Image 1 (cartoon, one colour):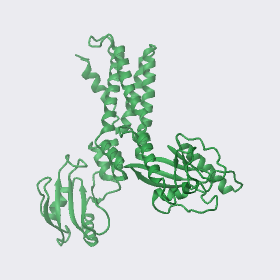
Image 2: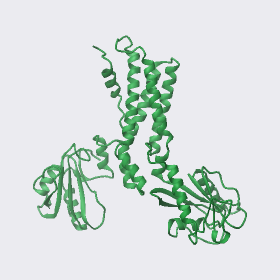
Image 3: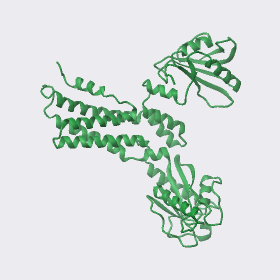
Image 4: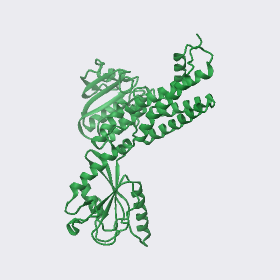
Length: 436
């Protein structure tokens, strides 16, 4: 993959359509438009042109053409867009014509966004936000992804990084230029206050896990003894036949998952094997997986059938007892809800309860962290700042405190992809009149 090549790709859906969008980016974009359309339109003004094969001059299509010179384009490079008719033969002909041009090739997966990042048009967190927008299945996921694309995490991370770099600059100044008159006498107190402030902000971000739950989906496990109605309930919630329903105990052996949209929030409903003692090795494995999924789930619906002995529910973070087959057993005082999945009785109340639980666990969509990568980076930065503060408070070596601050800044820089030690020098020389 050569970064100096001009790349092109279909940016709309595949298959026959009314319109097909072909995006072109790179230094040859202007020449390509000149060769294929006879000229270049005004920037960001759509015009209709006849596309011609640059090799033969044969007409290919009537297209809507846009020209977007860099650096004010998505990739930061010169860009062009060809809005052609969406017939398969038409798009194939245009793609062949583009491929025949020297230093022009088909783009690899994600290469337009990669160039946008490398050219400073987006940071890594915004790139992830763009990916999340494409993958969003619910309204809440879309809103969160838009915040990420808009720079919510990137801006916060950059503010934290700026504060830590300021701490580092002050430490470096204290080490190397303590005899200069511009270095404040109460420098250590100022540094400790700055560390406490940034630690508090990062700590509040780390305490909120709703962003990861919202992006990945809330996991709700259906658990209970055999024939408690788990598979019937799964099919009812999914509104289609996902699991096999049978009066034979132990039919479900493995874990089945269904992704649902409940009140605009993503929920993963998990059907599991009935919990009981068994000599069947396959069923034993199914029971073991069921217990593991219940233990890791955000919420467990413990299904209580009207007949037979019911074992104790497995350990769970949050558990709701649901009595099943209400049309047979009637209301039970030992259950939070009663349902009859086969007839639909009690399902609206159960869905409302699930929506309320999901909204409670996911919060109000105000999370900054949405991926495990972000959490690991901030955890690492927090640990470094704790060590730096401890060294300062105990009058330890300033060199080690400065190194911890440097590592903290680097860890936060990994979130956005901005890792540059030269920033320390910028702050050092702008904050103090050193070398005057």
